[in-house]
Image (tube, rainbow, N blue to C red; front, side, top):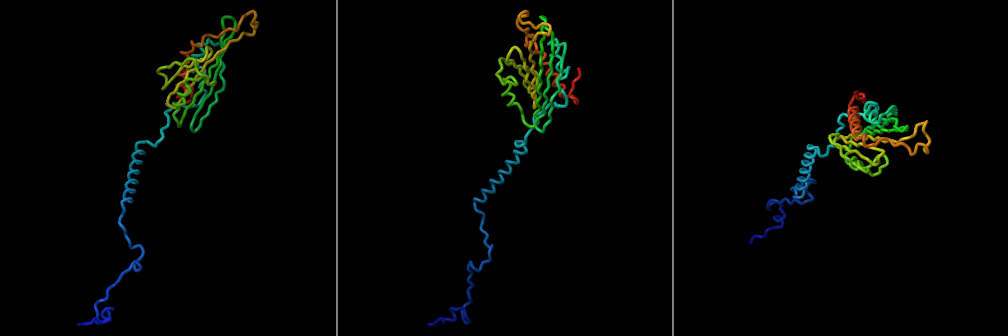
Length: 253
């Protein structure tokens, strides 16, 4: 029997070839390359899908803010000229008309105009009727005023009192309403794109300087019925809308 010597077991001369042993200690850092796990693949798919979905929404304009259409309206001059509100002064039978200076403002989000005029007309019983026309123009540049308009159209400005009567006016802007709260005032509110135009006429009566004795003359004279101003209100607002489209803000007859 042949006895294997210790030298042969240790791989020394006269033994077998030495065996190389490799441990994790001998491996250089970073040489391990595990395969992609399922959760990393799923995460990548979600990110890719979200990117495609977002790009589609952007292309469709979902995130793009559209500004209201102002239909060419601009605030550049006093819109309460004698011509634009002439239907009102003619209906009143005015013998004297006084225009107040307009307040104009142009801002990044809102252009505004506020103006008014007064008209005096004689009454048959010797008194005088004085009418006041007040115009408000709001041009919304960045936000749609429709929701606000719908919320406010049933209220009288500036008292915010509920109206007694509301009538829709066809073929004027996008929406238009005649608002009546008393027999002394009529108001027309118009929405057209980003423009909100409100024209109000009110009236009161008084005795003239030569007729001041209430005992002799009875109660104060009453101005004409305000309901007769409805056609004049509608035509006046049409004139104002045309004037706001003119370069100089004044529309000629």
